[in-house]
Image 1 (tube, each protein chain N blue to C red):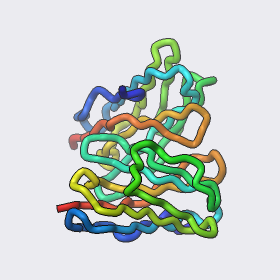
Image 2 (cartoon, rainbow over the protein chains, first blue to last red):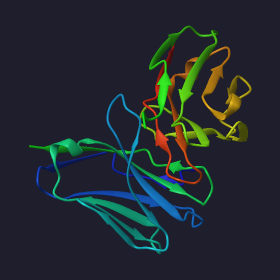
Image 3 (cartoon, rainbow over the protein chains, first blue to last red):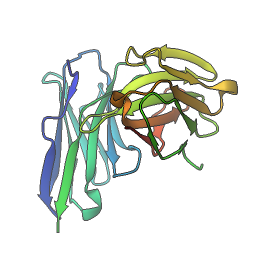
Length: 111
Length: 112
């Protein structure tokens, strides 16, 4: 049973527009959420995180929103740039060392 | 820092052979993790070290898999008697305490 789900395998967005990537989780014990970006032939690189005590965290063009009651988080990228084309993974932690990952969403930014 | 490095980047082996992968974490990081990623999936946790102690092993890690981290520095992951189902990307990450893990580039294993 997947505890972290990213239901969109891919997403295509026009350059300059907003990209919204979604993630749902089932385990209410998760208290820390992270987004990683992955380019082909590279390992995942950390993008942004949010603690369960917050509902929003912003870093430049990237904003993560957390809706605990819906067990849903989203990553907003605005404006989207060609270099944002990558696979984005949502990951969750229950306060221990282990991250539980979604399957990823491939973001394609069209020029 | 020079980041997390992994060697080799690619490995092709025949079924039944043994393979060993190496991970060099960021030098000041005391925690080291191994994950496995198959096509179309996110990484799955395999095992975790704090310094030289292996503190947790996933049930994904069968008896054919063994990991070590002698002296709390680099780590090795060995797979004995490889099977086709072992084909995957093996990712190593390190962190300082409960900080965010930083990942290496991975080792892609293909078992023919």
